[in-house]
Amino acid sequence: MIWRCALAPSVIFNNLKKIQDQEKLPEPLQFLPPTKRRESEPTIRLTHVETLLLLCHTRWGRDYQRQHGVYEIIRAAHENETVDKVL
Image (cartoon, rainbow, N blue to C red; front, side):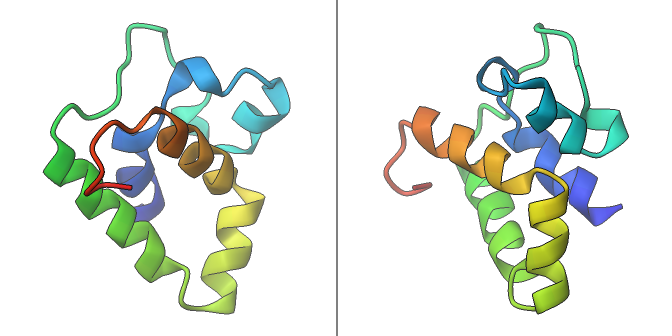
């Protein structure tokens, strides 16, 4: 599924501390081990951010992202992003 592919590199597992936030995520992304890290390449992270933005263009896409914890992932990624171009 495209959502799982777009979210996986962006997930910062240490910042999703609330169990409710993790339970909203698609099942393959829930409760991953702490050794799992987000994508290290800024260009790839930027591509994933742009993909998520494109998926927000429809009402269905925005509702789906709210229901599945995407906003929590984006917030955590934004807080930890160090490259201005990706912000």
